Amino acid sequence: MSSVLRTQVLRTAVRSLATATRTQIQATPARLTVAARSYTSAAPASAPLKSNISTTSSAVVSSTKDLIINSQRIVAGAVVSRQPLILRDLTPFEKEYFVYQKNLERDHAAAFGAEFYFKKGSVAERRWKQQEAEKQAAASGASTTAGAKGSKSSSSKGAASEVPDEVTEEDRVAALEAKIQFNDRITDADRKNDVRSLERALARTLYLIVKKPRDQHAWQFPQGGVRVCENLQEATGRELSEECGSNMDLWFVGRVPIGHYQYNFPKEFVASSSTPTVKGAKVFFMKAHIFAGQVQVDNKEIVDFAWVTKQEMKDYVTPEYYEAVQDMLSDF
Image (cartoon, rainbow, N blue to C red; front, side, top):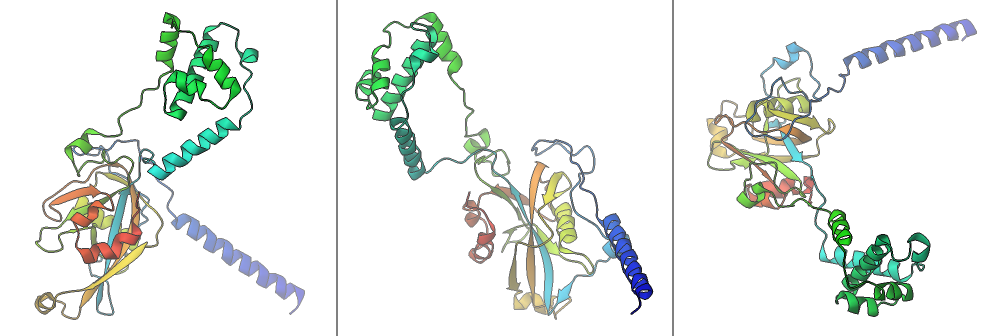
């Protein structure tokens, strides 16, 4: 191949690649910004809520024919979660480990030169000595004096012995200012056991499950059939809007399902169905996070909903269903 022909072929390939790249960039939707909103159960959205769901053309979305492959109805399910808002409680082993590390660090630490940092007889020096005595008492499980006397550190022992008996008004004010007020980790929703509230179990991951208007297999993740020429993310977003309303700010984590669940329809259902060739369904679960908003029950698609932890979900769904989805859920 001559150099001129090789150059022409290279230019044609580069031009084709640039055209395809521009087309892909134009087709890729930009990430939509979501206005800051709080979790609520009654307040409607002031404007149509946004998500990161990409959509195809209107001609494709308008199709209502269900997608059926190998006698299985393809279904899209949504694993909508509210992430933990606070740190979880430490286990007994973790607590003992951190206490051990703290004591080990204190015992091997170099002596603190208090006379270099504090003026002798000042309020700061007395406050530091009192704090050291309290730390020693907490570490040994005894009183302040006993903890100071039983300390292995000579510098801490000497400092604790010089703690004055009288506490001035200035010391009391400084001690009050030094205290940190922590909010209660147990909310009103926890006390009322309000499973519809997102303000409960702040240290745990909550998952949305809905109740269908039927007697058997009523509780499950929001799900629905995938239409022809509709991808899983589009189908999941549509089903969430139909079943749970539009008052939720959601963000889908990727476009690949995190798991699937396959089951067969009852023989009576297949015999009475308009599509007897469909023997069962295969559900693909898409993961999403909720940022704000709440579910709206329409008493048609769903009649109830709940935000539950992985362990609480056992009390709602069937054992077979829980066995299929438990590995997709977080233990914390």
